[in-house]
Length: 613
Image (tube, rainbow, N blue to C red; front, side):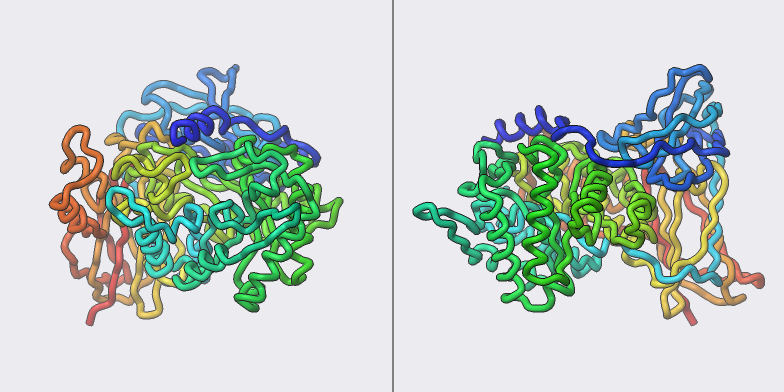
């Protein structure tokens, strides 16, 4: 069945469930002020924002006359970006290229191209300068990773089966607990609470029977970890499906519409009422209900777009019939699709959209605030309930340092505009297309089978270590602010933290690019003259905090899983490493100090300045 499920997925994942329908997104004017600044093996593009734009598509051509094509950074999903700057590392030094940018009011609605500009990447790289103003206060640092994390279907956390001798449920539980404890995550989102392994619905003698004992086991377990569920109302129980043969994943999740809409309503209503009775007002205060998953892909929805909108209306009505305060949202779509369509439909039908949810991979999430404003819904929470470096299962980039710097770039982009950016997923204990075949197999997880932390776990851990008060930062030089990005913060005890990384969206450079390394000078100003600090410099790069490199050095050709002795070596290496010994630094009479470092591409550093007496 594993081969069949994977083959089916790879064949149908690109097929849409109908085209864009029923929206009213306008065509927007192109950006003005487009500039292209050449640097070493990179070109940085900037432009003026366009009112109403949720994002921008960068186009490239060999000549001013074109043809211009969307710039493909090999992210395998949405190629547009939410805002400038954009750093292009796909060009060749010495070869001129032309750039133009269009504005998007919806992911499928792109306006005309801007006036083209040209740039030629340079062979030699310059340095980057970063200035952190310790006397500034930009308010509380947003932490969009805290709201939720993705997981394999939650009954998997109760599994007593094993992968490579590891008990699946125990390790998935451990990963979820660690996300809550170490990363501050409060909620978990997963598929399949209505799948038949949880057994919520059956028919006996033609009558519907609802049984929530399986749901109770799952949600009691999640609550025992200190996490709240984001209830994705999916998939279809066998006995309620209009076509039970329509399935996805190795575990056979049914993606058919219901055969009886009244019985679907009754199931959702009774389910919601049961949750409220069992867990009380916390369901109103902390839980939420997301309708289905990626219905704009045929592989996840065998019905029509119109049937999905009916599913949304019926589901939302059933939830709200239990308590008007309960939160319902969607469309939980793939590739940023169907948001315009759901909002247009809700405007006509009156269905609630308490939060807007969608997914994307391979780029920072688009900015749906302008779309919500067009529908009079300014301030509606925006939750990207799936996001990651790639939508592709079993793909090496998921285990690479590159994915950590990608994660940091996306989280910085999301700060202040997105309430939740949920990384998909927490653990490699994940069986959508078959269970893990090897220790590092390109799995979606932040943690491996065996509970080793991948580089992207450490990227989130670094961001979580940042202080509460966000500080002002400026960056300049060759790729400063585009290739090399920075977030800085201050804690109440006077500790200053600076996270900086060197990253591109260009996944053809996922294994690294020596010409994109940068010398970086970090200057912290606004300190007390003569104040002393202990500098800790933690690093994720090819040589540090990189379990993938360690396993690559240990494993023999053809070896899938570690021996007992190798597990011990891996556990010893499973830590966030220092780049250098702790140093003592003193602010000069102007109240500044400086730290110099070299950032490979990809790499991420966390500088911590702790006051000392």
